[in-house]
Length: 109
Image 1 (tube, helix red, strand yellow):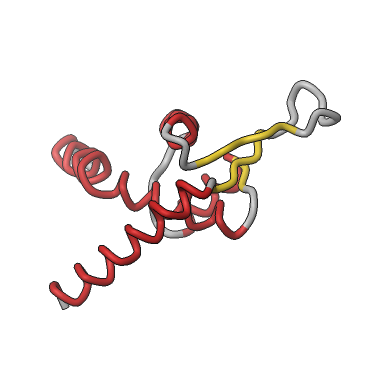
Image 2 (image 1 turned 120 degrees about the vertical axis):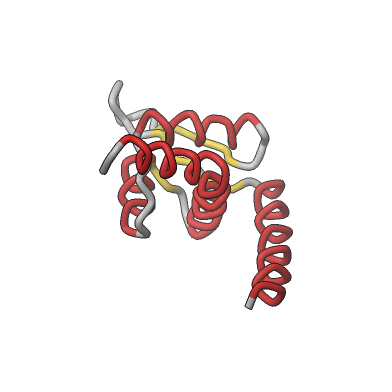
Protein backbone atom coordinates (compact mmCIF):
# COMPACT_ATOMS: atom_id res chain seq x y z
CA UNK A 1 0.00 0.00 0.00
CA UNK A 2 1.49 3.33 -1.02
CA UNK A 3 1.40 6.58 0.96
CA UNK A 4 -1.67 7.95 -0.85
CA UNK A 5 -3.63 4.76 -0.16
CA UNK A 6 -2.64 4.88 3.51
CA UNK A 7 -3.77 8.49 3.81
CA UNK A 8 -7.06 7.67 2.08
CA UNK A 9 -7.66 4.74 4.45
CA UNK A 10 -6.88 6.92 7.48
CA UNK A 11 -9.28 9.61 6.25
CA UNK A 12 -12.04 7.03 5.72
CA UNK A 13 -11.50 5.63 9.21
CA UNK A 14 -11.41 9.06 10.85
CA UNK A 15 -14.32 10.61 8.99
CA UNK A 16 -16.76 7.70 8.50
CA UNK A 17 -15.83 4.38 10.07
CA UNK A 18 -15.18 5.69 13.57
CA UNK A 19 -18.94 6.16 13.96
CA UNK A 20 -19.52 2.56 12.83
CA UNK A 21 -17.06 1.34 15.46
CA UNK A 22 -18.99 3.19 18.15
CA UNK A 23 -22.26 1.62 17.01
CA UNK A 24 -20.65 -1.84 17.09
CA UNK A 25 -19.36 -1.23 20.60
CA UNK A 26 -22.73 -0.03 21.90
CA UNK A 27 -24.50 -2.93 20.19
CA UNK A 28 -22.24 -5.60 21.66
CA UNK A 29 -22.17 -3.98 25.09
CA UNK A 30 -26.00 -4.22 25.13
CA UNK A 31 -25.73 -7.97 24.54
CA UNK A 32 -23.39 -8.32 27.53
CA UNK A 33 -20.25 -6.82 29.03
CA UNK A 34 -17.34 -6.57 26.58
CA UNK A 35 -13.61 -6.30 27.15
CA UNK A 36 -11.29 -4.35 24.92
CA UNK A 37 -9.31 -7.30 23.57
CA UNK A 38 -12.50 -9.09 22.50
CA UNK A 39 -13.86 -5.89 20.95
CA UNK A 40 -10.65 -5.46 18.93
CA UNK A 41 -11.05 -8.97 17.60
CA UNK A 42 -14.74 -8.43 16.81
CA UNK A 43 -14.11 -5.18 14.93
CA UNK A 44 -11.27 -6.79 12.98
CA UNK A 45 -13.59 -9.70 12.15
CA UNK A 46 -15.80 -7.13 10.41
CA UNK A 47 -12.85 -5.78 8.44
CA UNK A 48 -12.10 -2.70 10.53
CA UNK A 49 -8.43 -1.95 11.14
CA UNK A 50 -8.49 -0.79 14.74
CA UNK A 51 -5.49 -0.56 17.03
CA UNK A 52 -5.56 -0.73 20.83
CA UNK A 53 -4.35 2.88 20.82
CA UNK A 54 -7.58 3.85 19.06
CA UNK A 55 -10.03 1.48 20.74
CA UNK A 56 -9.23 2.05 24.40
CA UNK A 57 -9.52 5.85 24.27
CA UNK A 58 -12.76 5.36 22.33
CA UNK A 59 -14.17 3.07 25.04
CA UNK A 60 -13.22 5.60 27.70
CA UNK A 61 -14.77 8.45 25.69
CA UNK A 62 -18.04 6.53 25.41
CA UNK A 63 -17.87 6.00 29.16
CA UNK A 64 -17.29 9.74 29.80
CA UNK A 65 -20.34 10.47 27.63
CA UNK A 66 -22.35 8.19 29.92
CA UNK A 67 -23.12 5.65 27.18
CA UNK A 68 -20.94 2.91 28.68
CA UNK A 69 -20.16 1.95 32.25
CA UNK A 70 -17.22 -0.20 33.24
CA UNK A 71 -16.09 -2.33 36.11
CA UNK A 72 -13.09 -4.42 37.00
CA UNK A 73 -13.42 -7.69 38.88
CA UNK A 74 -12.02 -6.76 42.30
CA UNK A 75 -10.63 -10.26 42.73
CA UNK A 76 -9.03 -10.27 39.30
CA UNK A 77 -5.71 -8.78 40.31
CA UNK A 78 -3.84 -5.84 38.77
CA UNK A 79 -4.22 -7.11 35.19
CA UNK A 80 -7.95 -7.88 35.40
CA UNK A 81 -9.78 -6.69 32.28
CA UNK A 82 -12.18 -3.78 32.45
CA UNK A 83 -15.66 -4.86 31.33
CA UNK A 84 -17.87 -2.34 29.54
CA UNK A 85 -21.65 -2.46 29.33
CA UNK A 86 -24.15 -0.12 27.74
CA UNK A 87 -25.98 2.23 30.11
CA UNK A 88 -29.63 3.26 29.71
CA UNK A 89 -28.39 6.45 28.02
CA UNK A 90 -26.24 4.34 25.67
CA UNK A 91 -29.24 2.15 24.85
CA UNK A 92 -31.24 5.26 23.97
CA UNK A 93 -28.41 6.49 21.73
CA UNK A 94 -28.23 3.08 20.04
CA UNK A 95 -32.00 3.08 19.43
CA UNK A 96 -31.79 6.51 17.82
CA UNK A 97 -28.84 5.46 15.67
CA UNK A 98 -30.74 2.37 14.53
CA UNK A 99 -33.70 4.51 13.45
CA UNK A 100 -31.38 6.89 11.59
CA UNK A 101 -29.55 3.99 9.91
CA UNK A 102 -32.82 2.44 8.72
CA UNK A 103 -33.88 5.79 7.29
CA UNK A 104 -30.51 6.26 5.59
CA UNK A 105 -30.50 2.74 4.13
CA UNK A 106 -33.97 3.27 2.66
CA UNK A 107 -32.79 6.50 1.09
CA UNK A 108 -29.55 5.20 -0.44
CA UNK A 109 -30.82 1.77 -1.60
